[in-house]
Length: 111
Image 1 (spheres, helix red, strand yellow):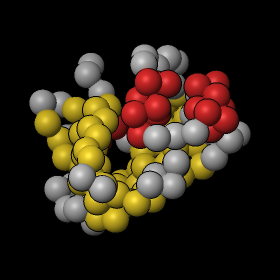
Image 2 (tube, helix red, strand yellow):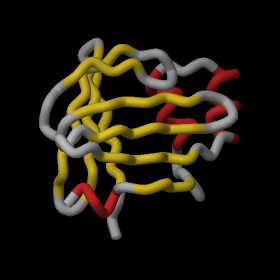
Image 3 (tube, helix red, strand yellow):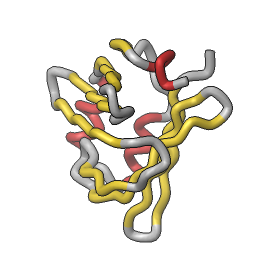
């Protein structure tokens, strides 16, 4: 099922990203750069099922490696330290992050 996500993906648009970053406490300058950045997302999977997700842009490159449904410590692009778990739900790759009593959910795919 993860196979349909493997490849290189280019962001075309995002909605309410500035409001999302504000809610996370991201500073003004970083939000301005983030709003103008359209990263490529590169997803690979090795023979043991370990998934590598790399967000690559001229501003910053962030890479995480994980197994589905196994929580791990993540340092996000805005330097938050989160406990993160990826899962497959209804054909989507779902990333749930928890830190400091807060939660964020990112869904990828809906095709």
